[in-house]
Image 1 (tube, helix red, strand yellow):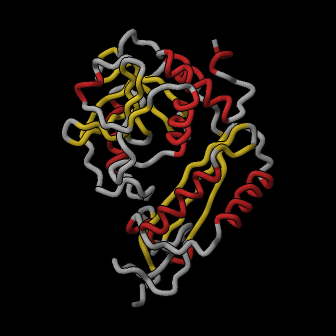
Image 2 (spheres, one colour; image 1 turned 180 degrees about the horizontal axis):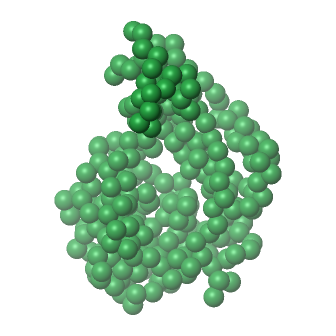
Image 3 (cartoon, rainbow, N blue to C red; image 1 turned 135 degrees about the vertical axis):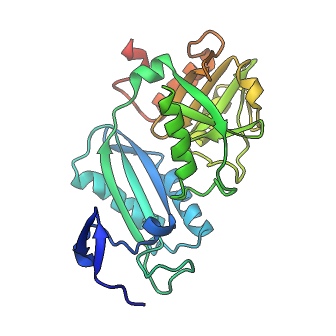
Length: 291
């Protein structure tokens, strides 16, 4: 199926060979791909193994052959930091798609996956981590397989934009009255000294930081229940927080314009933040030192 060589790009006619990207690319045309965002502290990866495990789970779920082992990819990612002389706090964005092929909904045959990764600086959000952030609630209209970290993020993007337009940091998603997660993070409610969060089903992305939050809670003897809570429970919470690779353990102090308890980060959230900093071997720029 031949494609004629002259195409429209950026409102101009041009030859397809001059494009900055292959326009017949499965990730671009179908969202047919997966990704990971991996945190870096002081030039070192945090939870690299966990992120690669999830990448390969996602690839298996949508039947993409990455044609590389976890060990080899790990070596490449470590070398990426070395080649960029990366010694700061930052992140790596890693994406893999089913490849470049003539547009057809069915999988192409004998087409290698496309994969790339790049490094960016990402300082810690110390002021937000110290004082907390606000959030809104909005219906969860995503597909049923949110456990796959796929490129199909339009509902997440729209929810995040809605939060931004209301001057908030994040959007808390709910199916009916049941809270699932946020547009780009996992969500937790603290009541009577217990942590509650949605169980790790196909309805949410099981975050790598969430794994550590559960481990921190266990080590601190804080009850951690994978039981969904309802939207109405939010406004009676003692504490709320979210977690992700870029947000870490982030306190939520108001939702839908209503203050959570005293409107300041609670003691359990603070303990988890301290555990996170210790686990990530963060020496400088700690929350406690940002006062």
